[in-house]
Amino acid sequence: MKEKKIIKKIRNNIGLFITIIIIFFSLFCIRDFIYDTELNYEMSLDGFGYEILFNEEDTYIEEREIIELMCPDKSYDMMVIFNKPTYKYIKDWQFKYKNPEYEDDKTGVASEYNYDTKVMLEVKSYDYSFAYKNAVKVTNKYIKENENASKEEIEKYFANRLEYEWKYVKKNNIKKSIYIYRMECHKRSYRGGYVDCVTFLPYQNNNDDLANAVFGGLVEEMDRTKLPEGVDLEETMELMGVE
Image (cartoon, rainbow, N blue to C red; front, side, top):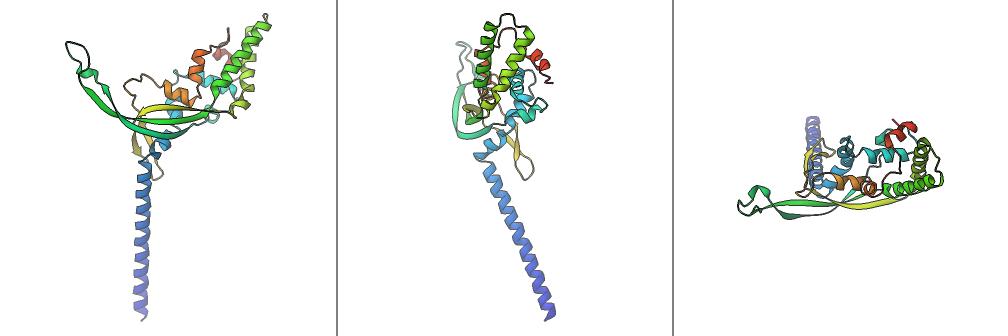
C-alpha cells in the first residue's frame, strides 16, 4: 500500500509539472500573438522615437537643445528630460507607388507599380512648439524695449523664458499622425521585442515627420518661427551651464 501511495504521488507530481509546462507554453504563445498584432507597433515604437532621433546627433540638435533649456534642473541627462511619447496604432493598408526601376526608356515614366503596406500611428507628446513660440515672441518684445541689451543679456532672457514655459509644457499635449512602413521586429526575451528598422516610405526622405511628432511640433515651429535675433543656442547652453 505504501509503495502504491508513493507511485501515485510521483504520478501526480509529474502530471502537475506537465500541466505547468503546458500553461506556460500557452501563455508564451498568447504573448507572441498579442505582440505580433496592433500592439506590436505601439510597444516597439515606445522609446524608438528617442533612439532614432537622439542617435542622429547632428540632425535635430537645435530641437533637443531647446527642450533641454526648458527643463529647470539642468543637471538632468537628456534621457530624463525627454518625455517619451506614446504611440497609438490607427490602421494599416496596402498602397501602390511607381517604381523608378521600371522607367519606360521612351517616356521616362515608371511603367510598373510596387505594392507595400504603410502604417498610421498617432503620436502624443508635450506641446513644445507652443512654449517655443511664446518664448521667442516675448524675447523679441524684450529686444525692442531694451535696445541697449547685450547679447549675453538677451540669450539669458530667452533661456529663462523657455524655462518659465516649462510649467505650461507639462500641462499641454499635442497629437500628430505619422506614417511608416510596416516594421520588421525581432524578438528579444520573453518580455517583448525591439524595432530593427523602420524603412522610409517612397515619398519620405528623412525622419522629419517622426521628429516633429516626438518633439511636439517643434521641428515645424522652429522652421516657421526663427530664433530671436542674435541668439546662438550653443552659446546660450554654455551661458546657462548646460553641458
